[in-house]
Length: 475
Image (cartoon, rainbow, N blue to C red; front, side):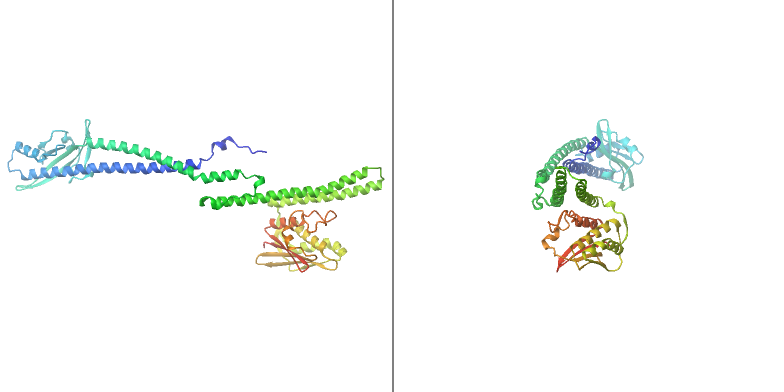
């Protein structure tokens, strides 16, 4: 059944990598260029302010020299001409000079400097940070008010000098420069965005090639693997992880296919037997005893099929839902002794002895599941042990955990068949089936139970003896 995707989930889909990288590059580039432009404009303004300050210093030195060198008793008209001539060559500079009593000695034509002298506090020297900017009508000015001390023969005299200059040209130049700079910044940002988008698109080309290869992988081509060395180093780990996942999917798909084939194969025989016996029973009239015998035979096949289905369901539960474990302290020695009592009559009938070695050991686990695993191992050992010999179960502890070994004499298992012993429906001897030999799921169930408890199982077969070893975690 397809999974429904809500409209809200689609609306909140994350932005694409190309958009994220392009946006980040665009924002970073814009911030950098705007910061650079701001610094350039501020530097240009500072440059013009410094230039005006230098101009004011030259004018101020000339005014100070004129005031210092004026003859004693110079009348106002002569002083006015002297001050006017002192700034010849500085047409764009306006100044006003007043004495300590506030009398105006000279005032240039231009802005009203008297108002600035009243509004602004006098400063001791001319520095860019002391300059004032104001606008009179449509014309902007920059200037300063200074307190000047002039040493004369008659003694020091104090004057107030106001200097100013028209900065309209400077401001228009800065405005035009700023407009050009921001336009260039915009163009550069757009170029950077286009370049970032193209770079990201080109950088994602390996991802698109990988996606194309992945789309070509189907259930018939699960053997295909991507080559980590053929992709950029940043994608090598992703490709390796995908190959690992693909390997697990291939293994699971193969096991599922084999499992389905094994189920069909195992169920076909009892179904065929039931069909054949029923057809034979219906081929002619029979007595009550004959029908009863046929029904008993059919019941055996039904019991066998029921056990097979139960085992398959148990395997599915232990492999897919480990939360079904009911953990408690399990006395392994007590469980083995209980199983020995259960199999005692069958073992005696076969002439097989049962022996337990080792001290009592308690492990955390699901008692019923562990009992089932031990039961499968012991029943297999009894089944394949020759008459007159015995099955030995050994318990021990070591640094790795708790070990439980089930050992029995009997035919050796070839080394090449060892890895297949725990596969579902596998039998070392294919002729041993159908009649009381089970469906070949016993060892698969044992392995599943042991792994569900965080343990492991191994098998060794040599010198006429076969040993199954279970390792479980300690308490």
